[in-house]
Length: 347
Ligand code: HEC
Ligand code: HEC
Image (tube, rainbow, N blue to C red; front, side):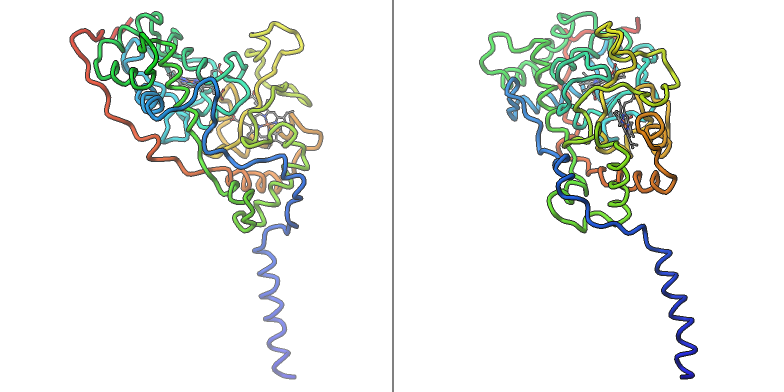
């Protein structure tokens, strides 16, 4: 008797301590609902632009090629750093002559899988997109396609690589082919995360708290827009459905279509690697993921998430962070310039 008296309070203490340490209990996630999500593909293939090894290798070199810019010090990797999850970590990027663009640079990881490119969908695919920044006067600022071609043709190593990548072309070194090669490379920019392991059936790959976060995400209606293999990237919607978006100077898709109902319509971004790709939103206005989640829940959904739900949603989102494919993104040796290669221009 004496023994039980001393042990019982101790036992209770231990029990309550355990309870406190435990995250909110969650039953297994509904398997039917999970069908709205898919494992990340190993590659995002395109029938129009089959990715041969030679084309991908060329695309990788071009992705890192600073001589595709007028000042010869800006490459795709300047704004979409491959070892930093495809972003530059700034609200809006800096291009030619230190000029700032108006929009946040989205990640190039998984971009090839989206229905369209850019926040406003003005390019159909990564191949078409790749030509944009090279000629954009505030990004890489090359004068025109023929100046890009003159630069590339001045380097024999490039001529060789283009021949291998486009063996049937009479003139393989073209601006269009450069874009195809960059696109083919981008189609392999994928990461694999714990969320993928979970979707493959390894139920212990994510914790009970993370599962609770996913349930809160689904119940709030986030998954009506952020779903599929990329947890987004599948449709356009208005931003600020329930409450207006604070900044109204960038009207999104309206600038492309001029249709009234497309004011403040943007592509729903992918949430893969979201913990690593801040600052958030088209204007890069929010630095912290927790704040971005709160804002979304106030502006896009009927019933805002509670504080603990926000914390759990962020915990779940971290399961979307994958491993950087170190070998695939390794910076290759760059072709040597010749006397014919144009020199950098400051203006
Ligand atoms: C000066 C910075 C800068 C450079 C250099 C740059 N980008 Fe971007 N990139 C951006 C910004 C900003 C956006 C978003 C613009 C928008 O939506 O209007 C973007 C958008 C994209 C997208 C669309 C992603 C999505 O989710 O819609 C892809 C893909 C991309 N860039 C690839 C490239 C490639 C390939 C290169 C090199 C040829 C490149 N970028 C060079 C800043 C840059
Ligand atoms: C009606 C569609 C819709 C719903 C519902 C929705 N979102 Fe979004 N989400 C978007 C759009 C569109 C954007 C891009 C907004 C922008 O930058 O203009 C976005 C952006 C985001 C971003 C920033 C992504 C980035 O790369 O900058 C996060 C994080 C996010 N949403 C999380 C959530 C969460 C969490 C919920 C639920 C509480 C949610 N979303 C509900 C459409 C939606």
